[in-house]
Amino acid sequence: MKRDVGKQAPTRFDALKLAERRDRVDGEVDATSLRRLADRVVPGEGRICWSITGGRDEQGRPMLALKLEGSLSVICQRCLRLLAVPIVQETELLLARNDAELARLDADEQEVVLAAAPLDALTLVEDELLLSLPFAPCHEKGECTAAASPMAKAQAASSPFAPLAGLKTGSRSRNERN
Image 1 (cartoon, rainbow, N blue to C red):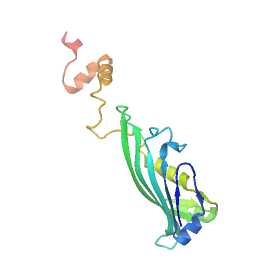
Image 2: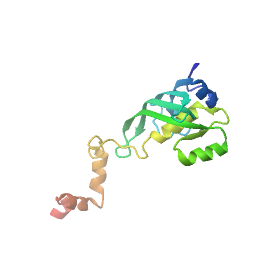
Image 3: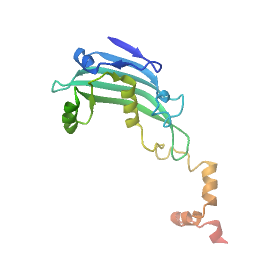
Image 4: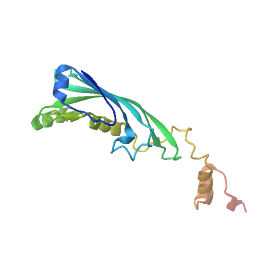
């Protein structure tokens, strides 16, 4: 039983039955259409393929394996330019049948989901995407164009702290030489 689900039709499913049958649901979503991600990613720049496979963990407990693959575009916090963040995420979620089991499992395990009611696949996908995004996304050292941008140079030159920056690097500012 494989169901393809797109951004237009979030799918609710019985997680415990999915685990029991070792079944799978999957699809593709534009992450910018997900409400809680909308302000963290660049619109139209976030196709994510996902799959949720039911099964059992090593101890025989029902679980879901959630896989995400794709790329999201965010804004670099240094240079304010686009930054592609690759998403390759695999997470195992233990399933709790009730609140008591949730509390017991949650004390020992990292990822536990209450499966007493049908789950929404895109909510699980959105949760994992939020956890996988960097808090303050920046290009790798040397890749960011913040120092080379004309705006950054103009801001540095007009800064009252520009002479102090010169002391740090060992050079003197224009005002000190005159």
